[in-house]
Image (cartoon, rainbow, N blue to C red; front, side, top):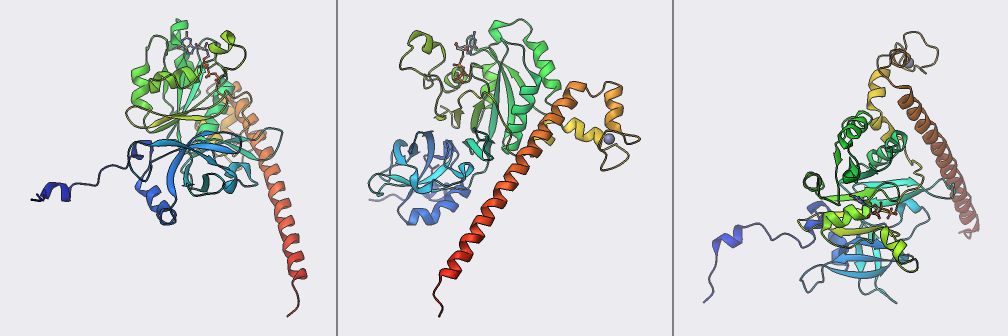
Length: 367
Ligand SMILES: Nc1nc2c(ncn2[C@@H]2O[C@H](COP(=O)(O)OP(=O)(O)OP(=O)(O)O)[C@@H](O)[C@H]2O)c(=O)[nH]1
Ligand SMILES: [Zn+2]
């Protein structure tokens, strides 16, 4: 005899196995046509050269599994558009000679820095993150300019920044440093933690929900934090390298590790120099300066010689520290430079495209 349970018919559908990783109804809707083509949704957990690892659910059901996929079919000329850790993708199990990515879903957020080798291209560090955890070691004197730069990168991504001052067990003045950092990061939560003793970790866990990416200098303690948050030894920490010079490595690829209670952490390799790519974030880091400048007499005040300039007044009476103003100008200049280069590159590309088109039109046989 079949028993019809009236409750189960009206109950919401069971959560998708990838829901904890951020698979939303919007993403499912965007994916629907791809599903019809026999492709599987998944999230990139690791990038390698020419291929990546994708976390997906087997059509047979069960727990999510990791599968390797070739990235070539979705690789583009623009590095900022290339697949990256955290991307939601369409996995083609039937691709030949090996399973491959067939599409990358539109990103909700992306941490993009200026590519290496002075190229005017962006490089994506992580995609679809909700929170950017900026790891800064308390063991060294924090560098405000570097923190402001990382904050700009984080704001620019569209995700919410959170500053994590690490290695609290090594210092006595953690609270003082936190106050100093808070002063240069208006509107941003600053936490102090020790992965070693566990101090502050509960507060971090409470804030690090959804998908988080860890960014910061090499040695800031990102991998150690990832391990502490995920309760695994997924990431190799730096110490290992001194023990075994040969094979072991610190973070080289960007890796996404699911969190036990839902959500995920993406560890990124230590950032040496962080070139900004896009300037929206700068305005958010320096919201205090933008607010002061709004009081200048002239809307287009250059803050140099104009009468009744609120910025110069704030610099004169010390409410706006000289260091912060210089830091702001420096990032602005840098952004203007990269913007100009990007524009030049886009112009060149469009010109090439036009040339190509006109050639193609000329080559077409007359009817
Ligand atoms: N005392 C103490 N040491 C820590 C803490 N967190 C990390 N460390 C140490 O700091 C060093 C660097 O840590 P990692 O986690 O490898 O740093 P990382 O930011 O991931 O470095 P990269 O992978 O090179 O970018 C290691 O020797 C860790 O053991 C902490 O909370 N307290
Ligand atoms: Zn002014």
